[in-house]
Amino acid sequence: MLTVGTTTGNLIVVDDDQDACDLLSAALTKQGYKVTSFTSPQAALEHLSRELTDVVLSDVSMTEMDGVELCERARLIQPDVPVVLVTAQANMEVAIRALRAEAYDFVPKPIDMALLEARLVRAIQLRGMKRELDRLRREVSSSSPPEDIVGHSPSMRHVYELVGRVASSDASVLIHGETGTGKELIARAIHKQSTRSSGPFVAINCAAVPASLIESELFGHARGAFTDAKAPRPGLFVEANGGTLFLDEIGEMPIEVQAKLLRALQERRVRPLGSNSEVAFDARIVSASNRDLESEVAEKRFREDLYYRVNVVKIDLPPLRARGTDVIAIAGAILKKLAPQRSLTISPAAGQKLMAYEWPGNVRELENCMERAVALMRFETVGVEDLPDKVRSYVADRIVVSAEDATELISLEELERRYVAKVLKMVGGNKSRAAEILGLDRRTLYRKLDRINEEQKAASVPPSNPKVGS
Image (cartoon, rainbow, N blue to C red; front, side, top):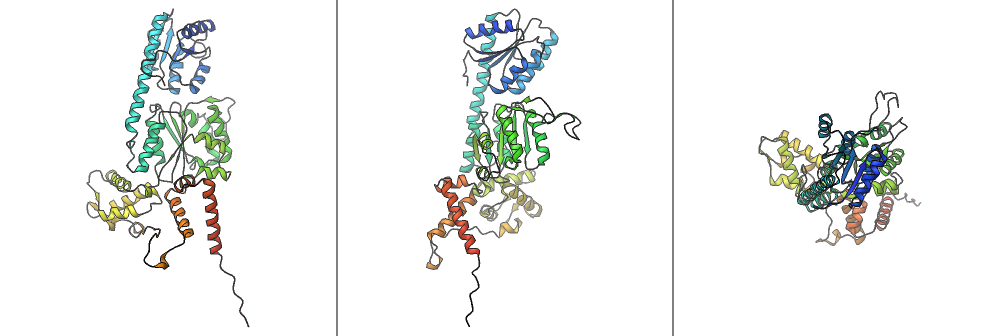
């Protein structure tokens, strides 16, 4: 990352006149810049989609694509990249187009190298300051909940810290958590705190799209690619250019589409259905799954190479039952949202019931519970009587570690079985996380689970009928 005051950096020089391009590139290289030159604007854009660049320096008059259009498309790929345009005719029409395309500056021809140097230094310093400010904002916000997320439990503070640290990079993120834990909220928080925040946030639920349509949704299609394809469509990868593409429930994606997704992520290009050409894209990929994808890989239901591609950084979202008093805070926030004109509260007895309940549906179930309470409550305080029967009558399971009667005691083997089951339940079935808490490697945990399952199967088989003697 460049720091404030840096006067050299990575430049892209674009001019379809080979001689002019070579002369300008050589002069800038002598001044200490790392220069990559192109006579093709499209090739320059493809390079920009792969490499972080400090300044784009482009001629305005080019046959394949003029400099103003190049500026527009460059800022879709890297929204904060300064584009300096070189022109021999800085007329009003070009100036207005460049202003709308958010070009950083103009340099007239013939080029005054001292003037160009001053413009480049200022552009690089400005971008360095923006990056530093973004970094400072992320540091300040990393210990507090992102917008729209409620809770200060230790497990969630760890999540907030990870969000703040990973947002500054373009690394792929995999969010794992049970249904209803707020995976999309975390994905949106990563996007908002990133340098791509001004770009689009595009989401798709892979479980909700039929297998026959998901490829068209992701990669787009050409006109006439299939019966209803009456017009071309770019697809979500291209729509997310300059921003973030959120692949929710990626574990539900058909195995045949996974191979095409892997290639797209590796090449940073997609081929629309029915098209003979590929389209480059620049989108940050954030995925989410309620499945344990490591287990899915082991069962050959998810590609191992794709798993490592999307799982550069993993964020485990804790289930609601593991978030302690966050349950009360979230319930209060839901009440405020449901009845903003009323000052609704939760009674201590109702609060205890909310915290004791397991919440298999997580925050979504809690929202349903609070909506029911608001519909039924007679006063301004949610009481136990306003809660659903399953919440009122729920009794949490406990592991007995002391007893007055020797008959209540259990064996170490049974204690281990119950504790392993409890830990797995608390982490939403995430075997990797359970193994970490238990201090075991995953293979050891898998062996214990296999043994427990075999014992339970054996215990469930009724004994054969005894023979009756004569």
